[in-house]
Every structure is written in structure tokens, then in C-alpha cells.
Length: 469
Image 1 (tube, rainbow, N blue to C red):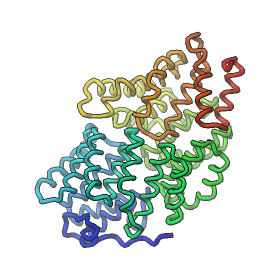
Image 2: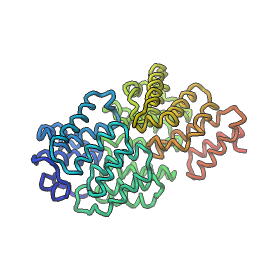
Image 3: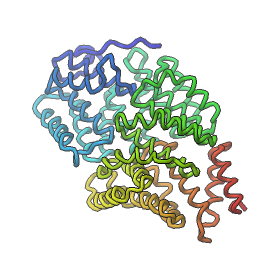
Image 4: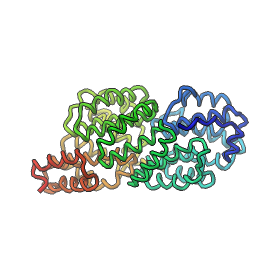
């Protein structure tokens, strides 16, 4: 395993051609400590965790602009708070901008400030353009790389997510701190664009250097999922579990991938055990949006398979209720809605739909609100119609937008919940117009992902109601 690099002080950042505008060595080291934990998806107790580092960073130099950029950027990239509803976050963005105007910064630092401010306004594509400007001149700027990678993910910009890393990858020599993690970041973009062999090779290279690299584990989990290699996927997660389970910001999501294999196999009780033991406790402990999405997605998939999830939706509902008016990501909104529908809470459902409709009517530069009318709202309405038992209406809403759902972001594996919804709905349609939709969707799914037990189950189900002829 690679030895941890010493945290970089003012001179070390200058030597790396990434100078920071502060005279505080302590602030520089704490910036590095925060960045390192973000990249590793792990709150490192020996460093005081991300929160601890950020509060010490602020104390070390209250006017350190890059300290403000990473602190505010991390809150925003978590997608659990918006400047519209969170006055503290709004003030943090304004403070960062004001401080940046009072001192002579490098162009790179100015671009970081602009990118975070632009992201806060909901203009993710423009924020990515600014981060890319940084990377053209400073290919080893990890903060620009990670923020843009995450934003591309939220936008469903799969090729950009891959190519952004391809452009800077040759500059990351092994002597640069965190260089092995760039392999994992690159591997994820390759995997999402179906370069499975290259993605697996890079992820394994990253793991040979740092076996605890939870993001590289995550790439390999995806590859096994996309190729329906259920046995290999389960063995891989079991054998590597002790290495990634302490990556507290990603462990829950890796357990979710583990559970997907079990759902594929039809081992529903085992999947629910993982949910009860790892996924729900993580959501209840930190309320992170990734954990919220995992919880809703998993319960929804199980429900579609005919599994009773008992009162579990009630445990997820408080998080959905808290965020029903955020409208930061349409992808999140769809998963909040699954929870409010599952928990039979019409008030939260109505509040989410009404406020989303309002946002779509005056979107400004917010990319999510701009997309709400044509994609977000029809998808949300389809979830409501599915709950109300109107399968033909679900198809009328979803079929025209199915190839646009990628614009809501998330991974191919995450968005598959909507593909499954389409198929399950098509199996229950009564209209003659839709009688061959299930057959078409199942043939397509089988061609893309052969040997999937879940697909085979659905094909058998379709055959029993004479939909495969």
C-alpha cells in the first residue's frame, strides 16, 4: 500500500505549481487534509474528519479564499442544501466572493471562486466550463478535477466525465499525492461509457496501490452489475468488504451495489438484511443524499418485484420531507417522491410536485429547473400514476422521455430503476396500443445485458400473460 504523503504547506503547493494565497502553513495543510478526505470518500478520524479540518482551517486563516471555496463547494456538491432555502449557505457563497475581491488572487483561484458561485446558482454546465479552464493550465488541480467530475455526473454528461480525466491523466505521475485515485476516477467514466475492460484494468491498478480505494471498488461493482456477473460481483464485495467498509461516505453505496446482486438473484431477504444492517443506519446517521437515493431506489426495486417492505418507507420519509422543496437535483426529487408515495404521505407528495412546477416556470439559469418541465415533471407524474395503478398513463408519460432520463444524472445502474418501472408497468397494461411494449423492452434489455436473472424472471412473467408472442 502507498505510504500517505505528508500534508502540503505553502511551499509544497508552490512547488506543485498550485500556489495558494495564504501565508499560513497550517491553513495549507488543512486544505490538503480536507481535499484528501473528499477524494478518499472517508472522514479520517486521525485528521479530525472533514468538518473538523474545515473549522480549524477557518481559524488558521479566516480570509483564505481557497479555504472558503472548498468548504462551500463541498456543501453544494453534497446537493443537500440550496442557497435559496439555506441562508447560511447563501451567506457563505457571498462571503467567499466578497473576500476574493479584496485580495490579489491567482487566475486559478479566481476561477475556483467563480465556479463555486456558478454551481450555487444551479448553472452546472457553466461551472464545469470554469473548472475545465483551470484544468487546461493546471492539470494536477485535484479540486477542479473532483468538483467537475461530480458535476458532470449530476448532469448525466458521461463522455465529458470520462474525457475530462483523459485530458489530465498523463500529468499525474506517481510522485504526486493522490495520483492513484485519479486512476479510479478515470475508471468510473470509462465504465459509464461501456469501456468495461479498460475501466476494470485501471480500477485494479488503483487498488493494487491503495486497496482501501472505495471508489475503485465501486467501479468494479458497477462493471459486474452491468455485465450481469452476479457471482463474481458478490465474491468481490465479500472479499474486499473489510477494505472499504470504513470509507464512511461511500460504504453505504457499495453495500447498495452488493444488495443489487442479491435482488438480481431473487434473494430478497438477504437484500433486506443489507438494507437494515447498513443502508438505513447510514441514512439515519448522516442524512446524506447518496444514502437517501440508495434507500429509496432499493425499496422501490424490491416493491416492483412484489416484495413487501413493511414499514420501511416510514424510516426514509423524514429525509424526503425535509428536502421536498429543495429542487437541487431532479434525480434526488424522483427518489424523494418514491419515499413520500411509498409512505403514503400525500402532503409531501403534493408539496414536492407543486414547488417543482413553480421552479420550472421561472428557471433562470438553473439547469435542473430548465429540465423540469420536459423531463423531471413527467417522470415524477409517472411515479404518481404508477402508485395510483394507471399503467397505461405511466407508459404515455415515460416512453417519450426514456432516452432523456440520462440528463437527470446518476449512473446507468442507478437510473435502471426507471427502466424496470417501464417494464413492470408494461406487463400490467390493458390498452391494446401498449400490448407489445413489454416484449420490446424485454428483448432490448436481454440484448444489452445477457444472462440477467432479473430479466429472465420478467420474460417468464411476460410469457405467462402471453406478452412474448
